[in-house]
Image 1 (tube, rainbow, N blue to C red):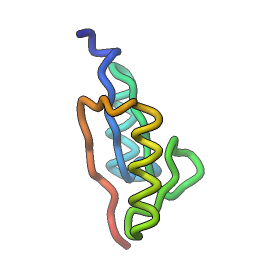
Image 2: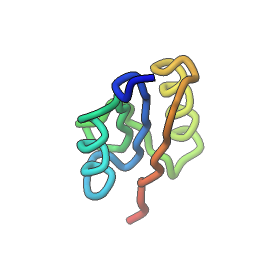
Image 3: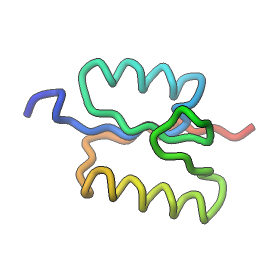
Length: 77
């Protein structure tokens, strides 16, 4: 399997460490970003049950259930 066919999901990807990690991974793989900002692929607030459910549904739709890696970098203010 080539690196470009690998799929990674990064939470907290709208700023800080999550953003930087997503940028690096995008050089070699398919990356789905998540956060609460406007610049991410999946906008979901993981501090709420509704947000977590939305995150799961959206990631399932985008990946068909195939994920090679998950970086849970979302933080709490």
